[in-house]
Image (cartoon, rainbow, N blue to C red):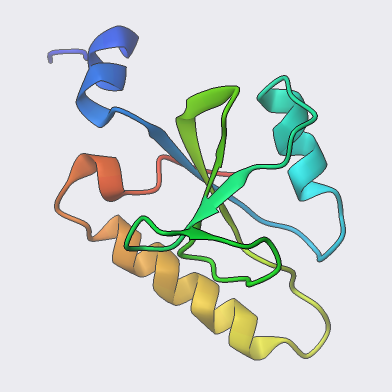
Length: 111
C-alpha cells in the first residue's frame, strides 16, 4: 500500500481546512491565535472570497490569519441550550464538505 508523505499531501491540498467547535465565547479564536502564533484577528471571507466583517457569523465563512495563511478555519459558532438550528447548520456543512469532490474544499480536521 502506497503512503503519502506529509509534504506531498500539503502540496495537493494547498491550505489545511479546520472546523473548530465549541460554545460561544469559549475562546476558540484565542486558541487559533496561539496555534498561528499571532495576536491579530483573523480576516474573514465569505464563500465568494469577499472580505466580511467579524460578527456576521456563517459557518461557511473562512477565517485566515495573515501570520499563517496555510490554514483555513471555520467557526461552528456556539451550541447553546436549545440552539438546534446551529447544530443542524453544522451537520449540513460537514456533510457538504465531506462530499466535496476537490480535496482542498474538504474539512481536513475537526477540533
